[in-house]
Image (cartoon, rainbow, N blue to C red):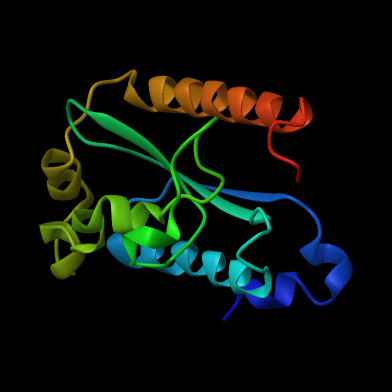
Length: 150
């Protein structure tokens, strides 16, 4: 896996890593999602150090999802108190994003045809980036205030 080489020794495994993804294909999202495998190095009592913030949009909607684990069993995630220190991967939260779109399955579409299939408002990228920045700022504030001891 590509991402494991980014963590060659224990020193790097103790650093908080937030991977922000803004990709258009299911295959790319799945590849980025694999970075969460790195959290298997931590015990269940530790807060994960690797998180994936995925930003995406469609013609009239957008989503920003944060996840830290690939575990599928619901008992793995304990919600309560101030929230949850472990969150399911965005691919577990929205598995439909792993399904390839029509333009991903057809290699012979022109750029114009692909643009028409993915028609979106002119400001959607700016809105998604702004919301992602707000999300990260709030989340990092929680960490810096010691509410999540990373």
